[in-house]
Structures are given as structure tokens and as C-alpha cells.
Image 1: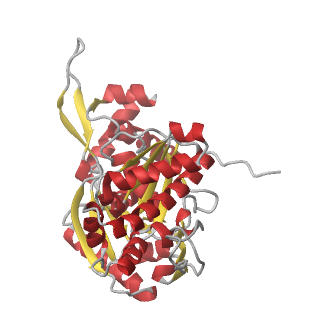
Image 2: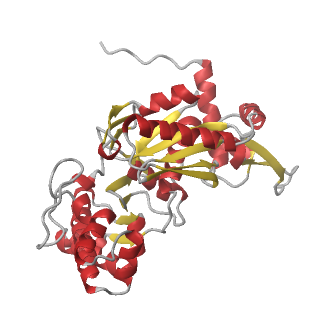
Image 3: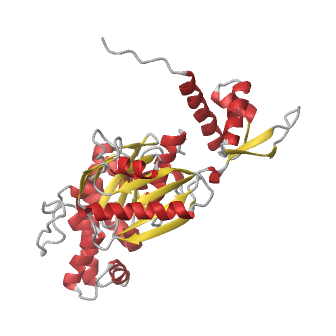
Length: 394
């Protein structure tokens, strides 16, 4: 016979109810205690006691009286954005970046450290140093914990980086290592998945409940939001499209060896480094992302050939996701958004050509805002969900 679940303890019930109250306040700019009781189904006495605890804990504050409905005007409550700061970390590029993030997704202070080719244990030490520097800059504010977005395959349920080839990490228990060193809760997630959470919760546009966010930068990965929640798959690897084999950059190029050891992965075809390398073989002045972007925008035919072919290959990858998920909204983020509308149109055309026409016509593919803190903010949002029980879907 299966073990029956144990009855919740008084402490567990109280913690659950406190999260209900905090979530009700979080989801509204201002709200009265009576309204919180109505939303949560808790008694007014219970709500008053729980609100008092949240105020004492620095998470909630009173902000004056609201409009009267016939009796005494109620005292209004709101979340204190600076009641806690999360430390968000992005490990997905040639430099590690981090920030102190408030409870509304605002970046308070940020920091960066150049990786300079270091990996393995040396890269872990850089992570420690980055977190140390942010804690020192946090001042008197309480640290909620650390959210980390890491490249590669990440088991976020256990905080383990299963495989990050560019960092030389394999089955690295990064979550427990950071938690033990700093004594705070830690969430570790794939960087593209974290970026998707950032767009769906704190992005400038209120996206629908189903969304695919494709991040094109040093690598390529996708974050999948289904029903307003991050979908990670059975092994936390959902959206790892960068290491799917689609082909080579152009018919005249030799197929590239991927960092994973295989040939022809999408990252070797459509990532920013792949485009820079292929364009450099044609035009020596193309040496970095900015020179690639500038030449493409200027209409250089050799660079356009490289970029538009890469866009087509990305379109094939997106078409495969459209077929598998039938999600009507796809957002492209990362440095590739600087390539602009011509790049986007090439992606769209190939996706429409490669996917079932009826599904492709229903799908909107757009470029996101050019910003570098999606992973930092998304990892922080995942930490807030875990530690405070906040429902961050809009």
C-alpha cells in the first residue's frame, strides 16, 4: 500500500496561508485587509495576524486609507519592493554578470566579471567572488537568496549543472555549493529558461500564457512557458534546441564541429559567434558581433548572405517547436535582435515554409527588446517563486 500523505502541521498551514496573503498583496498595487480576506478565503482575524507578521518582516507596508464604501475608510497595503533583494547571476556568456533585484524585478545594483577563458573550479571561484561583491554592495537590505542561470543542461530540481561544455562542468552540484558557502537558498536553472521567465513575468509586454522564448547569443536555447508556468521537461532540458543538428552555414562552408563534439548543430549555424566566424572568412573586417551587425545593416552582400542563411536555419528550428508545441507566440531575444527586421523576416519566412501552413499562420514570431539582464531577472523571479510562493505569471 502506498504511503498516505501526512497531515499538514500547524506551522506548514500557517506558512501556506502567509504565502496566500503575500501573493494577494503582490498581485495588486494596493489592497485592503478585507479584500485580502475575500481573495484568499481566510477569516479577517487570520488575515490581520498574517499581515502583521509580513509588516514586521519588512515585506508589506501600510500606505494610507483607501476609498470608503460607507463605513470607515480601510487602511491599504502594498508589497515593499525592497523588502528583500534577490541576487541574480547569469553565467551564459564570456563574462559572468549579476545583480541585486528587488521584488518587482527592478535591478538595484549590478556587477560583471570577465571569464577570460577560465573554466572548471576556476569558474566556480568567479561565481563565488561575484556573489560576494553583490552581498557587500547590498547594505542593510535582506538577501532572499541566489538565482543562477547557467548554460547547458541544468537539473533545476536538484540545482545540478549536468553538462556545460564551455565551462568544463559536468554533474556540478552548483546549487548546494553556493547554498553551503553563503547560507542562503539557491535556485539554478538553464539560462534560456530563466530568460523566458523574465519575459513572461517582468517583460514590457503582457505575453499570453503560452510562449516560446528563443535566445540567440553565444549559444542558442529556448525557454517554454505553458499555462503561465515554465515547462522544463522530465529532465529539465526542454528547449535545448541549440544542439539539434540542422545542417551547415552555407553550401560552400565546411560543417562546423560543435562544442558538444558533434557536427552541424544549430549553434554552429545560427549563433552569433557562428555568424561572426563565417562572415570573417568572407570579409576580414568582421571580427566581432558589432562589426557583423553594422555590416549587415549597411547591406554588405557577403555578410547578408551569412546572416540571412543563419536566420533561415533558425527558422527551421522554430518550425520544429511550432509543430511540437503549437504555441502561437515566439519571441527571439539576445544579441541577435540587433540584426533587425530583415533578419526577423528571414526567420519568419523559413518557419512558415518548414512548419505545417495552418500552424505557421497562427504563430507570431517577434523580436524582443535588446537587453542584457533577462537571465539575471528571470533567475531572481524563479527564486521569488520558490521562497515566497509568489505567482509571477501575469
